[in-house]
Image 1 (cartoon, helix red, strand yellow):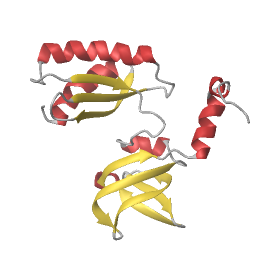
Image 2: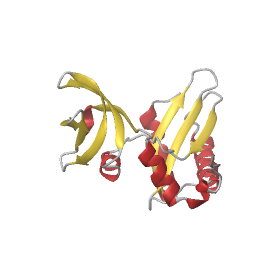
Image 3: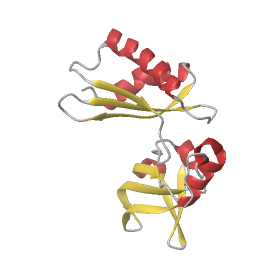
Length: 172
């Protein structure tokens, strides 16, 4: 497989040209790897199967024409899901108030792992995270991995925004 940035440079303009944001491009596995691409709508509305199919078809054309992956692979296009990865500074601003897990490359105040509420992002791309009654300041460039944590509040908000989900709940 080629380096991730080669694929990002090739695919992000295609994805954004279709009206989507590239959340993450990831290669999983060695033998018969999966190229996993997570997309979101620029307007924040929900991704549906047709969106994934549209992006998948267009990306397949680009990958077939440029052949950046020499070996056989599987292409998977999906929404980021509720426990979405936070891969850009704007994600931390957008999801302020939500709980997240954040891992850093270097220790910040003697820690590399954090789990707390995102309280904001400043103009210098420093992430503010409230954890254990105190606020940590984490430079975005130090973040190696981050994702939203699924909580009862997050699930309730999703159900409130998607009343059709509540139709399938069985009360005891």
